[in-house]
Length: 411
Image (tube, rainbow, N blue to C red; front, side):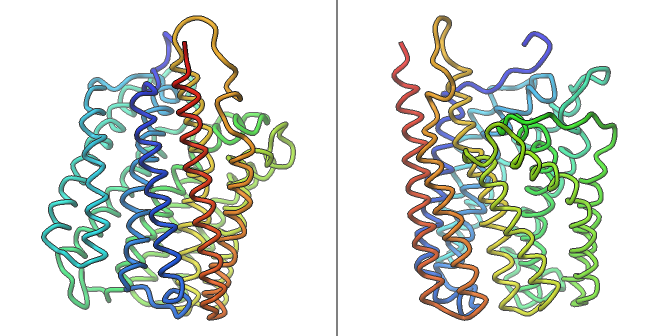
């Protein structure tokens, strides 16, 4: 540990992870109410907007911040110079809660204030990322790419900036692009540019480690992440210019870039000593299936209805599911790593494995039913799928809380 950074303490990570799980439960419950509208391809209702932002500005910021604080100092082999700023960033990220409410209920003044609070927290997180990248030793082997981490951070900032621009200009064509297409750009930047690039980069080490499989080979240049980002920007150009050919080309290029990490994840699932038997890899496999389905939908029928289903598959099934699946294991690892000197339990004793297995099965059934209900215009099926997702979210919250309870039983 003398030659690496230090993960954030459990007393910082645990509240962030639990806040993320609460945001996930809120999103899933709102999805139940929004399901009939989504099945009709209507995305502007109160419940649909609330669910989207409960995921986007509550679940993702808390979960990613906690994971960054826990993993990247070790992976980039240094500590940020101002670690105490994390305690400032944590409450600022809670600005996402009133922001989600304000956006769903169209309270522009509250939304503006909340966006400033959340944005300040995200800026502090990005400052830490920049410090970790800058402080990473050049002569040592790093298990994540500094360039790919920076790329994910740039896309996160861009996604937030586009969202802020939409909030400031609620007209029919913010940024000179039709409103719903700007929202698609916003989502693409967040789900593909930020989260998928980050998952591909960090996951090449983390997924094999948690699946007990062979580590990824060393590399000098993050080619898959760069190709993925190139495809993303072709996709964005196609969305903004309303050119289906560019959209298809962007999907194909991004898919080609992501094929390398995707194949590695599938090998871990098939050959790892744990593989799909625990939440992290199980959610990766489910997420890859959702990602593939979304790509097929966009390529075969680039219509409004399939776009709604694709966003659900990518945002909930892929990005949300992969982050969620790793979250349970990361809480237990944080508790284990922060255990006081002396005898400590095995990490597996802090991880309620059965609960996360049940959650991953419920999650897979729920997202597939919800997406299918949207594709075939079946409100009852969509609502049933959302209800199963809500049940899965409650299991996830219970499992995360159980890990914290077990950790608090330390001597």
